[in-house]
Image (cartoon, rainbow, N blue to C red; front, side, top):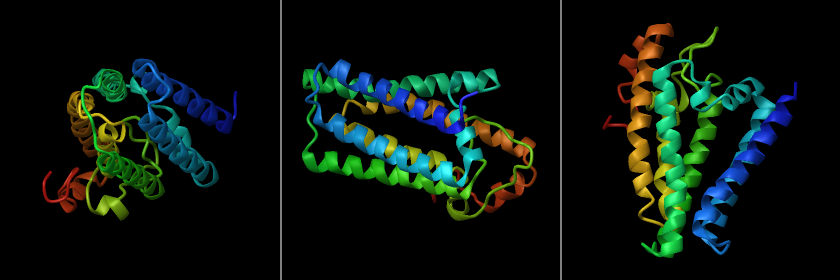
Amino acid sequence: MATLSTRTWTSVAALAVVMAGLLFLPAGSLRYWQAWVYLALFFGLTIAVTLDLLRRDRALLERRLKGGPAAESRPLQRLLMLGASIGFIALLVIPALDFRSGWSRVPLPLVGLGDVLFVVGFGLIARVYRENTYSAATVQVVPGQVVISTGPYAVVRHPMYASALLYLVGTPPSLGSWWGYLGLAFMLPFLLLRLLDEERVLARELPGYDDYQRKVRYRLVPGLW
């Protein structure tokens, strides 16, 4: 069996090839500079987080490698992850098609703002990893798992989703496209349904989660929901 390090870097390399293909093939050009910046940020941060997990929390990294629709144990979650995955693909492909056809123009300062939202969201995800070693890529409760109520979990019950939402919101302008929000609009209902189903699983299977729900009222956005 390949080592964890080998499997991790192979997955990162494969993801880089797939994401580059989803951006540059529909764009029909390598002059899509916004895509180059986006990929540099995405994989620069991914490499930094991966190195940190290899050094600090290899069990979490192992759990994060097992993601996607096929990794889910229940049909509902497989369906929700499939929908979310299709939405993420659209989030990349639609801006690339926009670049090719010139459907919309995003001013440079707003491209920069999209990049900032992306980096902040990704950074907050790394913070969640440091707080919660049980933050798997699948909906599950593992032996020995406990409720985490510190750090970002003291603010909202699902800081991973909240952080991901920041970088997803930043992605279309980062890629120079307003039409890219169609991909996010498709993706968002699947993510929210996944969050609600995950809460039901945690309340049923994780001791103390009911008390945590009463203590931390908001799921995703403080003061709103």
